[in-house]
Image (cartoon, rainbow, N blue to C red):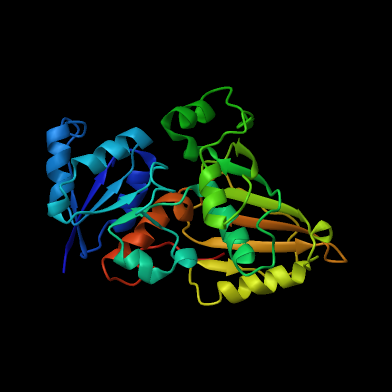
Length: 312
């Protein structure tokens, strides 16, 4: 069976990467609009309602508008790569490892996780869910991403003459990812989020430092690692690495696209301090790869088909 897929916003970074992952796959027929019709509401409405699955790679307001253009009778299912519906009732959060593959497979409306929340939630949500970390802890997230996640304007800024080497932002403490991280980790308080951008095109390191000895239950770093290894033990996408720490974790300027997610738990000698670290491609498992993973499930296909999971 061939599934008709329309990528609304196909000219953007996320849309282009999704199309690249679907290229040559005979399970899908891509519905395309030429440049003169990409922003035409009537043409978009027609394509959205013709598709079996519409993937929205749009700003939040445009994504909400696209959903309104879909006739419920058309049967079109939706994967929204924007942040418009990540905490909206009736939408499935598209993180199969956390919510379950069956739930994603059956969903009519799927909201793609954000790139930073993917790293944070992969580390923290299972540990809170299983009682190893407290839901009422004041969690801090330090993260650095490749500049491709900022869209065309930021890409142009980082690739121009005299480009910055590093950009820290989010100083208003009101980043749009905060509700998503709190809700899907089951936390009582918003996280303190410190995002930044480095002069690498793609890649992301998300870190959650923890003073375990100050927690009432005093969990040990080894216990956190073992719990994550058990939780992701059957995953072909997520790898929880052993306790031997590498000398460093790097974002490579010319890194190849990747849809995997690598998790680490580093503890001090007593195990009472820990650094939980996620390493991923902000355009892979952090965006386009996650959308294709959900698309596979929604179309009854093997979950990792077309994903780039080769490990160095």
